Length: 370
Image 1 (tube, rainbow, N blue to C red):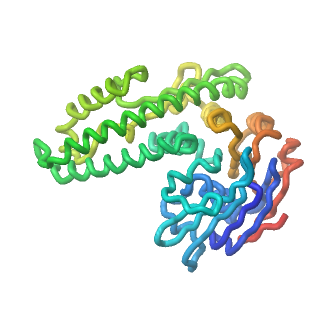
Image 2: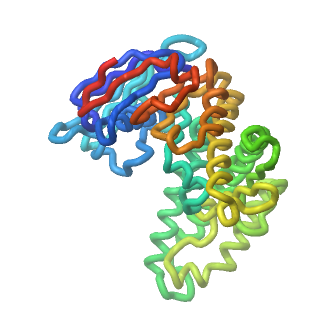
Image 3: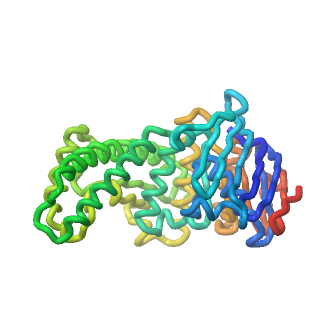
């Protein structure tokens, strides 16, 4: 898949912008704080209907305007697909082929992207929340049903926590709805856990040989998904549900003491091991970066397998974070196979032919010149 044309209206520091892209490599060059990352962010929002760096959509709308808009002509294997996201202070709406979508979860998956930015190094050394978000966003791109289950789970978690807070400090829960919410919560949790296990198996399949290639065969990467302690991936849904029910009963007293749900996928963890050692704790910075790069390249292959065509790759100021060898490995991998967007302050020092043949855009104070 590829993005042929992008239009922005009142988005961040762009009053209006209309760009046509190369189907291969597009490079945005400029100093920091000029608007390069805003373009990358708009492509991510076009895919995921949310920003990777702002929690409030109002931040995406240009200062002193009422709404912002992102439009693009996307080409997939079956032809042209116009996409559109409109952001306003009341909310956002999404259109596919000029038709407004009833739910944003119906929209996500029309355009698949893989974003690699310096903060993605936190996938390895950051908090468990960063890794859970990575899992959820990537599965959501290839499985709209997962997004639906995740939203259901989050809603039930909120309702369950609300009752626990109301009963804070008590010995028993005084609310007839609590057991109903808990039963529904367990059902949604099992669906999420099973899907995450499936995704991790696929990610491991692609990431392991990629990591071996980058490390010149010296390192073996293992990805380990850790849900509730003791739960086994080979169990049936019924067995998982029974186990979760038991675990929730065991922690009920502590939940009432804290007013929080203490067991569930919202507390799961993802670990990375290289040659048997935990990369987060014992890995060098180079090993952590190789692991992050392997995951991103594996994402491309995974999406390609699941969707039937390659996603769009967004490299936001990341080439300068990689040494020459990892940089070359990345560029060799994407050459001719994935439409790629790159931001950088300069292409000097990047000798790779992929960059030399790219379409270049100069970005300065919210204006873009080719």
